Amino acid sequence: MPVYRTPDGAALAYADEGEGPAVLLIHGWAAHGGFFSELSARLARSYRVVTPTLRAHAGSERGVEPLTVETLGEDIRNLVAALDLAPVAALGWSMGAMALWAADLPLQAFVVEEMGPKIVNDGAWRFGISGYSADQISETLAEITADWPAYVARLAPRMFSGATRARRPDLIDWARAEMAKADARAMADYWRSMAAQDFRATLSAVTAPVLALHGGDSQIYPAGATAFVADAAPRGASIVLPGVGHVPHLEAPDAFFEQVRNFLRRCHHETETLREGVDP
Image 1 (cartoon, rainbow, N blue to C red):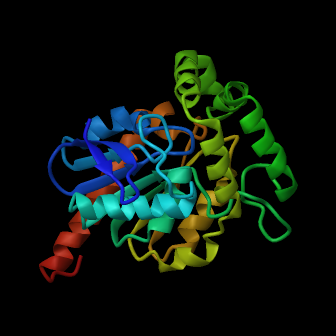
Image 2 (cartoon, rainbow, N blue to C red):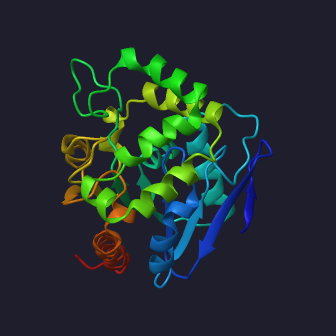
């Protein structure tokens, strides 16, 4: 697997598959690029698909920069420039979407998978993580650093719908084992940073077409989170995938792939027709 070295010296692993228009896949908190292996292989039949593992996640180094969403955004900008990917389409799953918002790339298309612009609920915002408020942040950080494997063992099943847990217990076991490889203190740093983010005001500046995908049985985010993203983006749309939870690309890989492929096709067709001076 190739490696990109950041300006501060961190080696970030990434996969680079296929040929054609570039598509960037950005994974979620405590995961790694391997969570996109199947989706990447399918998209690579028509696209050049680049899937990095974010710094301080399993397979990539920590470096010396602060472990924040802003640092992840800078890493993504640098990687896109180093690999000459622009113009690029991107998919961000969970924290990966926040990292892409922070990167502020000129995108051709943007798929937001199971993520809202703010994870903490308050009196003016009810579409954060279900039931999660500011007074729970310190407790979460303590749980993460006290016993990371135990924390992951509780979290991993909640990421999937009840139907997926019954049908694919092996998938939940795999996700739990892979997430347990992450460094607890690094994940606590990222959680602290995520909890401080609020991208609501910046969504209207995303000029690319946006597709916000929500798992209909998600226990992590309410449907209002992705609906807000779609409504706030000037060219946004939202789709609910029934029977799945927080990881639609693993729980319903065929349906998820079809939605993403069709969206990318429409966006690239629109780009080509505009380039040729034809009204799409």
